[in-house]
Length: 209
Figure 1: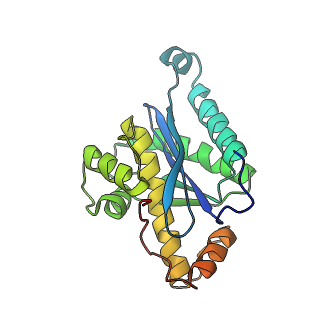
Figure 2: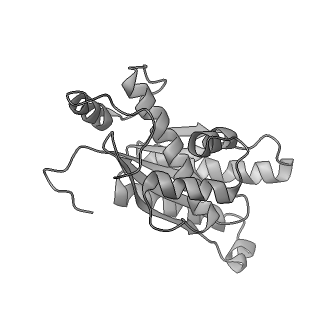
């Protein structure tokens, strides 16, 4: 994707919705400190035949997907949903394996990973920690100014993960809260400093006008 030299400085986030058995969702968004837009989203479906042939086939596919997204879109940060503590042990272990592959791919590309609990993601996007998938999808569409509801739900969840981190990072920058880890936020910081000349940086992501 080519960028115009006059384009406003942006901060880009890759969100991942890992899955123990179903498709892994991914979504990329970017913000100039005022407006936020969707860049790319989708899901990775591993064929059941391939999954049965090799226990690591699905993990290898997820690794290849994440590496490709990091290479093609150069996000500034990666956000992933954390393991839900109420899951049964077998499902939790499978999910942890997928998250491990995500962490490996991010480390190989020097990208900081941020984890968020499912309830926090829903609360950040939909305003309610127990919001259902339809509500989350509708709010993701509204916040990103999309013309259609993002489908499937796993992809919408990934966009919600990215939005959650974007909101937290904008809040951190606005109130000059020191980062807990070495997040590569220089782009957003420059955008925030520029926007202060005309007004404060919005703490919450606003859809494009």
